Image (cartoon, rainbow, N blue to C red; front, side, top):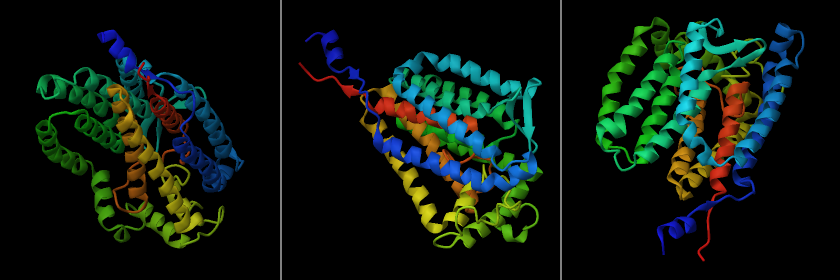
Length: 379
């Protein structure tokens, strides 16, 4: 058998079907998200915009556009993203720099994390996360025989991470920085990077993380309030206290959709960062467990896809995309349950926000494309 024939026999052929085991929990979460965004934001929207349907309409439009994006990405071969690794990286760096150095940067709550042009708002850190995953999948696949070499398999990836995190840190957005760092570490580990390099880099970063946590007064206060939020119920611990009160009030069955109390100008950003708290109050423990089960299904399916694809780039890409969604879920839920210090991260597929929803729906479409690749039968 010639080398060409061998490659042809092992080539991956696309399947036109959709992965129902992945699609069902995603669409279910998006549907729940539309309902809960309306429930969490209607009073706030009525006061601010004169109509309780403001955020509902926008989220419904984001959801429809997200489904279109999912379908498009499902149809695009995953390997199409390989040559886009560096163009995407240039775009991501440009967008992040534009927040700080152009007039298009837009601030909310003291953080400049968005670009605004006319009526269009875009969060570059979401695109930067996706770009980093594509870059790492491409680079780790390309350098798979040299990953133990510090100057080839480790340093270039850390330098790229450093550029992105520096631009995101000055926004400031420490939560996004931590997610990018965790994604890089996990993908290097899964891709076969040197365990020595990974361990030493982790140890070296601990004092840096500590310095950044204590160097800014507001971050230090958040850390102290996280340890005992009930000692600071009217200032630094305010968000966590009211989030925990929401979960406590929900009980086993919940107060009912639309009947929550903490969303009425007590919980900050109830339709974005703290929508899980609203779910806990209105849908109770049963609703929380349902949401957890849906996320577990997505994560399990994503890992299964990564483990079962024969294409190394596709496997790394699938693992990176799955890891990104999983980390965001864990951090958001950890914050709302008082298990982690407060971070401004949305809950995938549920929270209000166009950029986050579109990027996550694109990720699911790519995962489905990778899952649909079947080895060509012999003969």
